Each structure stands twice: as structure tokens, then as C-alpha cells.
Length: 519
Picture 1: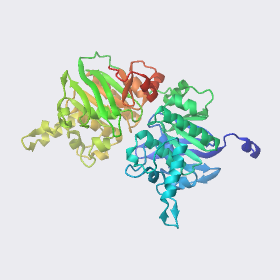
Picture 2: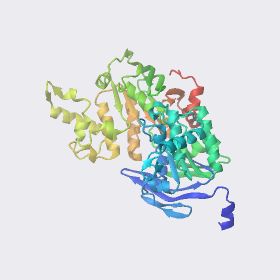
Picture 3: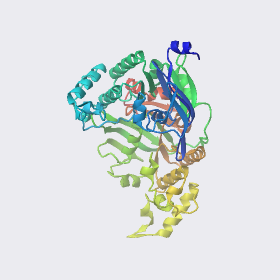
Picture 4: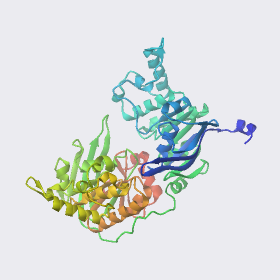
């Protein structure tokens, strides 16, 4: 393109990434990604959880460094080794998870580590307060800059995070799920600010799962799937079916075929489960559902929808939770995890390394950790019986390990996940809770996990599983319940339409539906 064309380009490219590859131990998060940020425009980035969106933005913001690839700003190659390097190039980011100090004031948070000073060493508190007040007025927020941040509700804290980014006079502003905690009125304010920033020539990267919102606010769209770009174009002519198609694609994963078994009796019921959250409202907002023996129930929703928290409530991990759980028609009143396990509930947690395994212990010790009572007589542990039982489940779960005495950390991610599932099954559960059972494992291990889930259901175990993978929840579930803002926002049987499930997952959908849906 010649210079004259560049001058008249309405949205010139300010930042370019070419061949971006990011490798973490056990996974490739980005696979040769090419991405452009156009100035004076909203550059929408969309994809399922785990598609690589946040990783790409962390690379641009200097939080992560590329394994391979090149970044250019205004045509000049740059290397962002730290967030300060990115800030120096005019890049600001508002993360999905707030990076704020709840015990400090609003103005201290907005100008943290960038406070104006007098005489080179004394912080000018009056200037900090006044500049914060101007920013908040620009965002149409009547918040006292000296208010302790932790006293604000989450939506207001999100606005403070945006003010913090605006205070840096960023030329490129990355907004990662900026409306996830905002009210409808606050969303409208944010959109007005975005229009103002566009008019000033700021390039905005906008990440959101709310597809209608993307179509409304976006000028260009890029879709990521499994670390690769599957669609990139101007927003004109883009509709929700196009986005969904680019997000999930045609390629079929091995979900194993349904074994066609009949469901049994109601094995589990939750009634009116509520989990309050700090600052008001609920993480889980009066959820009721049932599961039958042999049924696979998928829980789908966006981050913060309350899916994992609901499973944690079942496992008695939140004493403040309210409501009632029943197994085989009898209420569970046990106030601790061990009591819930004894009643036939087992959990495969989302973070296997933190919550599911003890890395320095052997495969055998991890496998039997939740069921040691089976091998204990008085004060003595029958090691031979324990080893035999562990060997039985290692074979049943097809864990690839030379010796059960090897540390569990020596196994691949997929085999570690099989150990976590085996540990849960060794307790003899009636209901198996699985939180993101296929996260962080390769496609072959996923196929094996899916096959195991089908077989367990055929054996009469009721399964509730949480997933962020839309294709996975559609293909594996006998029934799907969608959560948004902690509430049930939709229920679907087999053959559900992907666009309908995604629409139900947006908080706007949840607000318009009956929050007391009961399955």
C-alpha cells in the first residue's frame, strides 16, 4: 500500500502480530496467530474458553512473552518483556479478573505506581484525587475517589479498573470481558466511552462472550479456536450463526457414542441452592435441578456464571450456602466433605494439580487418598490390599505408568486426570461431579475420558459435568442446563442448537428468563 493510501485509511493498523506461538508445558496456547489491531476501531476477539484469547492479549500487554513470532507497533518491531514495556508503547489492558487492592482507596488504585509527585519524591494526593474524580465523571460514576475500593460493588470496581487504564492515556486499550459485572446502565456508559475513544483514534480490542454485544460494538472481528485463527473480517454482514460456526467449526471430536441405556430413578436433587457473595447478590442464585441414575447432565455457562461454585456447594465447601440436597430421596445434612463422600458424592475438581493431586506422592497414594478407610483396620493400613485395589483402578482407567510407586507428577496431563477420576470412583459414588474434565489434556486423552464417562453412565452413575467447550456439552450431555449470573437461564435436551445455548448463557438472557426454572 502506498503512502497516500495509508493517509486515507480510515482505520490504520497500529499493532501487528505475525506467527505468534506460545507454548506452555503440556499445551500450545497459540499456534502461528496473525492478528492486527486497527486504530480508531473496535477489534473484536471471540472464541470459547481456552481458545487462546487471554493468552494473546497477555502477550500484547507484556504479561507473557512469545515463544515464537513478531510484534510490530507502527511498523517498528518491538519486544515486550514486561507490562511496563507495553505501557511505554501506549498499551493498556483491563483484565477479566480485577487487579485491584480492596483495602486501598479508589484514587490510590487508579494511580498505583504512577502517582504524580511534588519536588520529585512527595506524592501529590490532591492531584491524584482530582484526576481520579475527573476520570470517574467521564465514566458517569458518582464515586468518591477516597472511598475504600472494597466497599464498592463488583460492577463499580470494574469501572474503577477501566478508569485505571484510561489514566494511562493508552493508544491501544484491551478490554477483556469488560461488561461481565456491569449493569445494563453501566454497559451503556461503557459503550459511550468506547465511541468517544474511537473518535480520538484509540484502537480497542474487545473480548466478550456476549455475541449480540460484539455485533453491536465491533468494527472488525477475529475468531480463535484451539489457538488458531478461524475467521477474520470486517463486522459488516457478520451474524451470530457465522460467529458460532467459526468458534466451534465442523471438525468432530471423538465424544464416543451413547450406549443407549435407560435412565434409572432420581439419584440426586438440589432444591433452591443459594450462595451469597461479598458485596451483595449471589454466586449461585437459588438453583434447583435433578439428575437420574445413568444420566449425563451438562452445566454450561460463562466464567462467573456459578457453575463450579454450585459443585462446591454440593461438596459442602461453602458453609454459608443455603438450600437442600438429596441423594436417593434422602436429604444430605453432612456439613463436611468426608460426609458427602460417604453419602455417594465424588468430585473431579477443575484444577487437578491444586485440588486433585499431591504431586510428590505416588500414583498409588493419590489413587487411594479418598478411600483409605477401605484398607484400614484399627490404626493399621493394609498396604497389600491398598496396592491391589490401586492396581485394579489403574488398569480400569488405563493409566499409562510403569509402576504405581512412581510419583504422580511423572505422568502426562491426561494420565493425571485419569488418576483423579479413578480416585473419585474408588469411593463408590452414586453421583460423579466433574468440573472441566477434559481441560489441559490432549485429544487422545480426551477421547478416553469421554468413553469413560459414557461407560460410567451406563453403569448407573449420575454424572454432572461442567464444561466451557460448547461442542463438548452439546455432544456428551443427555440434558443441558445453562447458568448465567448464578441462575438457571435455559434447559435443553439432546440435539440442542448451539446458538440457542450460547444465547441462554449471556446474562441478558438470564435476566429475561424465569430465575426459578426447575428441571
